[in-house]
Length: 167
Picture 1 (cartoon, one colour):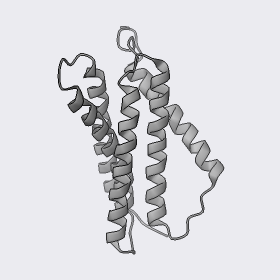
Picture 2 (picture 1 turned 120 degrees about the horizontal axis):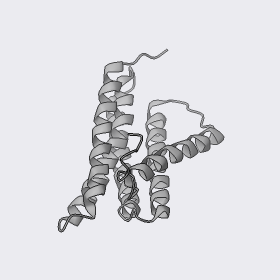
Picture 3 (picture 1 turned 180 degrees about the horizontal axis):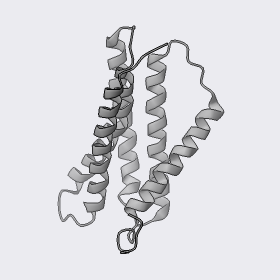
């Protein structure tokens, strides 16, 4: 039985929330910016990838690890680079958020990044990990629904216009 440090999990959740909030704010301000579009593009991609990668990294380091940490940290770094590259690809669609299909495609790509990052971290940590493909597909579909729902609420042009909104 493995033990874990819940303070690291809470710290990872807080930092992930801050990174994702920063990315969503930069996406919302992308259209109104008169300059620095490239800076905002890479900033959004970096914030999204750091937010996705950070939660799996803090989840990994919160466990009691008996293996060599050199290999674990190297693979976690590779996972972060993969997360950044796919986040750049998702941001291309998310910055044109006035089309609902772009939000759907962006949420599918971000969900793929989330599931891929977690699978890489599990693969690095676990010696013999059996992947249940139907469970991974169901998990991916649930993550797509949650990410898509959140992006539609945040990036919808009229989401904040109603004074009677639930939030």
